[in-house]
Length: 134
Ligand SMILES: [Zn+2]
Ligand SMILES: [Zn+2]
Image (cartoon, rainbow, N blue to C red):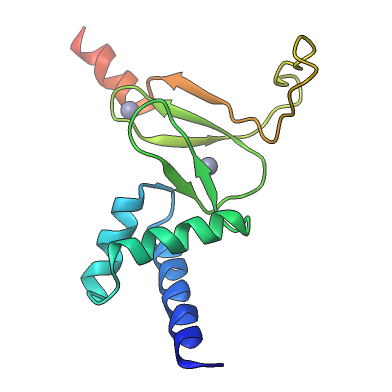
């Protein structure tokens, strides 16, 4: 392995370790900041590039959510999400059989690659707070 290659492998494992220790649904910025604390020589663009590569290799899920920036999720099996409109936290929702995304029968010339479902509402903590305030 040449020098550039081994450096890339090292950077990749640093990003992967950060994802594992941070857990959850992370913004690229959070991932970069956590890495930057220990490895200031790794640039923001390097971290973002590696995240993109991991998504392409299906080792990481890239999640578009209605509120805030893109999130990265280490859980790559098919699952849905819930986002709290108040604290903006994201929760995993187990995919249930009875809730299937509608088929695109009306659009036969379109091809669907993936389908992501994000429920919106208030999480348990925010709901409890809202009830107390009433
Ligand atoms: Zn909340
Ligand atoms: Zn998730």
